[in-house]
Length: 468
Image 1: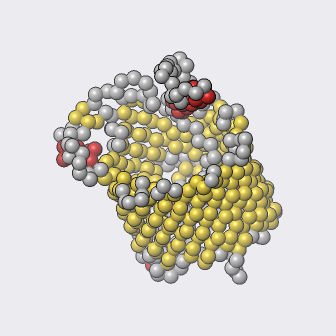
Image 2: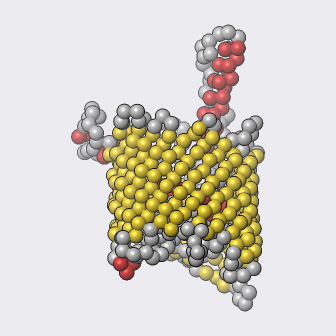
């Protein structure tokens, strides 16, 4: 929910393909109306390079252009039979945000100018093999380089660092060693990913973290009545943050994740076990199941997540259940989006792994529950779910060929426990986003919430994102 607009480099090609598709449909419909064939016998000429929108390149391209035209280089062949065509692309984003939050009571106000820089180095070897490196030199976990406006004295926070936030290799075993199966008849197409990599399951409710891990993926497994099934086995040994967003150096995660496409739904069944010492919260078991489908023009999703604390409950791991549902649709005669989300938490549900800036498991509920991930600005209604229920209803409008959008949302959360772990509250939120000059995104956020302890809170954010 927090990234409701994503503009991509290379989108010009998608626009060109859409234009060609629209021309084909128009031509076919006209001929059908005249009683002829629905398909034209006359070829439609391809758009020339001059007619296509200009390609927006990344910061650096070596060895070939990202989504650029032209012949593919011949590359070189390895002893394994694989042919590598190295291409290095460097790209990223710089987010700069002014965060202002004023509370009646219960917590400090926020007034700051914060920055977050992501630099990505993508070394593409083939269509399936690559090395990836990411650094975030302006924030050290939850400490962002920022200028904070304080009542007594302003201060500068230095969050600069040289830490590597992601470094991994991924590939396909069958493509790395084609010499073992030159006719491609054996089941050697096993995906491999090893290194520090982002892991995301159950829309981030179960796992949303960057882990030192190794994963094996077997895709395109066919069963009767099933279109496709994918199995993922995962082992993570480092950089695991527990449910409280704090790193646990002693934790290890073992997971099995299954995704199946049926004619009507996409179904996920996920299982994870986290082993740690009792001083850091102890062991935990985590289960997740979901079904996503489109029914009569309505997009629906239902998710059930369960956590079990095996060595006593704490902020690191606890026992509880999270039920989540959402549906959305496009109103008639528009290309807008209306959505409704709802959740119920029983006891104290805990995620298996949550990164330092990823807040709690309710970020998917809506704008009022999502952590901005930049500076000290909080989720307006919070995103913890212990013994609580709530949801959000919103409407998203698009303008200027989807370059501009406005989202309005109302939401609420209520505790069901005698001694509440979360605050009851209601709120309204508004977001404006506008993309300009290919690489820039301006975002304006505003919200008002009324909660049990903090009472009235008014907040606003102005953020400028530069993609390069």
